[in-house]
Image (cartoon, rainbow, N blue to C red):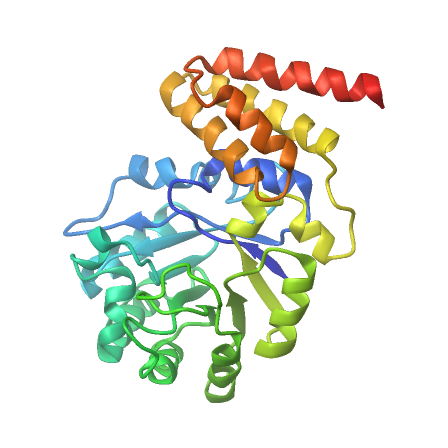
Length: 317
């Protein structure tokens, strides 16, 4: 079984990938989508989303990172994929056909393309030809835009166009992130394609992961929100231990130090609060901490508060 860290815009950046792959359990990461339109994006644009390209496409813990591209024009997608693979050394290219954001869909990208299987084929085939074997090619899709009527045809189009692996988020664009995820539909997709299929959606616990694999028939899974709320989830799925609050505080302290080191105070403050708030789904202590820091504007003070609580729980232990 392989476990992939999902590409979550505005959440899973290079720093979060660093943290979660230190906690272990992940075999692969995919970047936030690199939005491309009209021209080939410059090197700096790719490095903004995937700084790991300067480290042989590996996190600091040595976990591979694939670059995800998103756009609606086949030729532009192909040119950018070729640049990433041939010039920047990307070790994997993933195509985003699942983003449900209205701003993205209005520009005929992400999940909006699921309305036209022939467009999926055109883009994927163009990218496949452009990278010419320099990097493996994968795609991520949802079950559809407004309904699931094209789910099987879309999956087949992606395979026929040259995708070597397919990740399926088991909801439509219209369903967004509302439970449940329809894992049984992934099983239907597996029946009509011959490439590996990765299951994604509504995996919050090791038990969810097991149930998802049983229902979908997938060996491999991708987790996103579940990993942010429960950072040890991937290692637990592989038989490791749940990260108790003292351990989690230690990781939070490191993360806050990294955010301060990034020298973007307002951004760093926001990311610290975001993670602490999301941890509240798993840790009652995180909810209490968020209530204390939510009005705090100084990231250094937030770090001090995390450090103080870490010291307190260590003294108790």
